Length: 272
Ligand SMILES: [Zn+2]
Image (cartoon, rainbow, N blue to C red):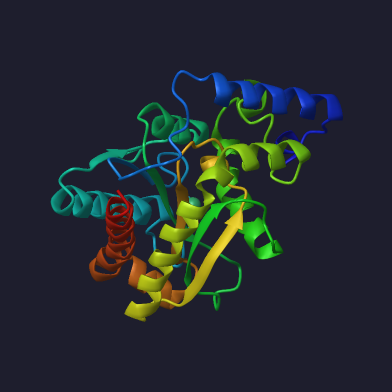
């Protein structure tokens, strides 16, 4: 992970603070912090193509489960929230670099970015669903999840030479600044939606609710809107795997996210 955790110096921190400050203050398209509704949702099916993600005992891989749930979620939004435009980072089995996923959301001025994943662990007894928001990891477990998900960059041919991730280190001084200026602005909304997803998981009772957590995910790193990464369950746990590879489980996982988006949208609109 050397290239993702470079050494930094104070002058660079000051320069970055200045540049980020200028980009926010001077931008012709300022960050839309005071959202009054949800009009564009970018749904990101994790992994794809040569990046299969994790898997359990069955042949079904994370990239397939994530895509199925992402498409189901998009369909629910398109059918039930007609005024919301859904944009997918991928609708088929293709490789997309992590930075591109965030760039798609930023370029389309999305009001919400949702990345869908499945979890994995060497201990098959670990099970449950959790939703992550961008932030500093508070436990080694959270760090492990972000490291595994961030590992997709190693499948990007020239990730270390591209410089696209050179400023990524969630626990560096620069990261604190970026987080406070960018993602923290959206953190409250991100946590709000994440909590609602987990409430839905808990109320259905099929998958254990592991709560809302924070960790440094590359895919959420530079998104300029509320953003979430949903770990829908552990493919390495037989019960979770059975659930996530079944139609009913995938439908329910999509519905848990959809209901949270719908509720959040209604809440924003009620404030108008
Ligand atoms: Zn994943």
